[in-house]
Image (cartoon, rainbow, N blue to C red; front, side, top):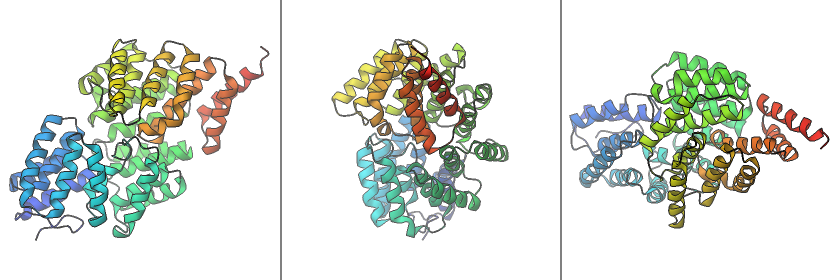
Length: 441
């Protein structure tokens, strides 16, 4: 009987189909280019291979090819009727995620992993900055991700994929030293692993180790240029190091060369959120961003996320629309309010307040922006993404406080962050707040 890379049986009589499937899964788990071709070859060798179809559907979903993803998921459901119970459940869980039923997928995945903990593609749905836990609207998603990794760790040992996500989960849960150590083990086992490079970048960020982060990413990206579909997002991390170091010019140069939509070759949710958040961070650093850059980001966002629904994209749509003074923000806010009224907006009303805070900030109503953002900040974790991505909203609150004369509030927020990690940018903001607070009124 053919088996996957973790020893689980595969319902296919074709050795070559099984081999192509294993290749595709490893490429997908390592965020490496080529998984779609591998799954296509597996399907070609065995058109009845249900798991190859659902895996290919997952790749379509990542690239926002929703119609293709749902068509293949439906076919995989049909083909799985003659497969094992494990494979039927595997298909049903991935199909639920593709069909826009995240709660069903999350509950199904947790139950499935209790019986089949080494079903890595199902496990992977739960993990990461854009996983089912992160986008569930739960305030404890970082803890939940770490807990399920620790629950099943004994089944994986020194597996490179599992160590990647165990390390990342520790980092995001605040155990940064452990997270970095575990992630370094993962990337030592398999350097050709975009997810591990990403996880290590987050550990560097959370430790405030800009020199190590910059050195690692510069070397890794050069060695693996164009091979990971996280290449653009890792370049975003390079730009983030530059912003943290006070080098806005370098950050914008990195954006132009490796991140902007016209240069992007990676999943649209990454592209759009990376572009919007980096341009916004640059404006917070008093760097003038050309209108053409904002307009390009707006066009890309409207193409892939024309209506509210993917709330993380919607929040970044608010940044772009606010920066371009677009009427589309009010339309998006109305759509979000409708979703919230139906109980279909995972983070709840706080997401709407964040969007309104961004609008007020762009309109230079810094008092209103500070009020809205401060009220929403306790629930900001519920929007998902990584800590580094969510920190943008606290950055905006800090700058709103600085520009509205709330210098003591800004200093308090910045000081709390500096207790967690060093930051040249935060230190500059703190000096600015303290100097302004000491001036006689």
